[in-house]
Figure 1 (cartoon, each protein chain N blue to C red):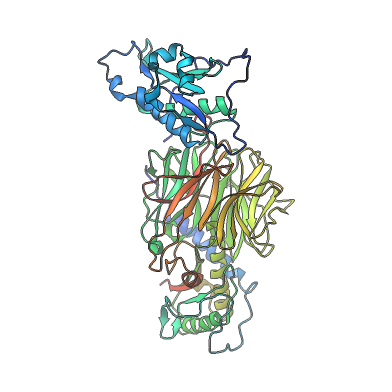
Figure 2 (cartoon, rainbow over the protein chains, first blue to last red):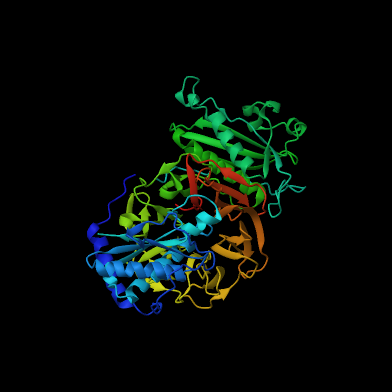
Length: 169
Length: 449
């Protein structure tokens, strides 16, 4: 069976709509910028606090933040990491990023897609509220489709409840 | 894709004058006592010459074998060993000597004949006999080609099932699912379609992009599913016969969790924007979009009632994932799940009376059903991970997928399709060439033409 190609122009048009929509949607749900967070990460809920699986956008700039089960709010540790990401993006004004939202495998597929989208957007909103232009940030949710750690353990699940900031140019 | 076959109903005879109660199967309860059924070999009659190539097709054996396989897997029939049969197929088909069949404890008997009519068309005829009352229950013939013998076998199975249970069958149907290969961290997923018995798997996508949650339209002409084509997760519409896939709508963000309306004219789905997922319905032809929920929580997994008047969906507006119903226009939203644990993937039964769901409770996953007002919750099966039930066309069987846990290196986990009766009995794995998930059952093929 042949699968017809989808018009690239069509997709590009939709994509531009997406960007257009995002520029008007900021601030509404953005949390207030955290006042100088504590330097030591604080464990909150069952969010992962270690450094395994973490990669770096630059020296000392972690690429990901972790979430508690079924939650999409930012932990103190997450805010700490995102402050570094914001500073890095300010210093590299030509860089654009995609924020990937992920969930662990202990939930239904469709709900997890929505949850990943919420996680990616809370990160996007935080970066915007710290002065990063919204048109530099895309989001994509992978739900539970792309775990960082394939094991079926509480540790792996905590490492998979994450958002990852990926350079897109 | 959809095979066309010529079906001619010659005669459908129901005995009007039976004195004692005929054999019937009660499928509303768990059936631990399946009906002893003799399925005789069919035979080639004299219209097919001894050297005709049709005889090499072995359809006289293959058709009854497939009928037997279907009936046996339904859990309602116990096919008897063929070696114990006393009468020859051609003799039994003409008039069974019922004592011979009672002797081997058969309660019903299936016989059949394969012949060529004067226009050289292949004709397959079967008869269903009530051995206990010594009566013919039904008789039916199909004109077909040798290549279509599987569909004929499924249709015969449906007729037997219908005559003995009083409900429509489900054997002449297909299942669409997601075929999975590769490591968990970089899984390759392809759309695949097969007959309900697992035969004839065909792949509809190449695996270049992630695809999820395929669903048939009730008219069996389309499939709607989610694809990460160009890394933009969106709902697509695949025209099965033309082999053309199109983006559905032009939403400025992720669309997911699609399902058809009962008239196949609309797709209902979630659209996520700026961290909020709501439910929308879109008319396929006019592209008109209707927003049905407007709430800052996650609203997803919508499913229409069979008359289209209501929708069940999944929302965490109460703080946890629960099941809700609303009218087709989005009004009269009502939470219906109140048990312990969280609930997802509600799907309305084709009979209209039940909603099947996934439940997560104390770290275990369950497939269950409840009435549409949330009462009468019944859990059918429990496991490490399973979700996404889909109803058989007659609403008697649920198909879903189950995953096993992976070890610390990510090895050992697999995903397979399983089915279970509404009664909670007859749980079975459906063999697939690869790992498999997200199964959806089609409507009966002959009914949807």
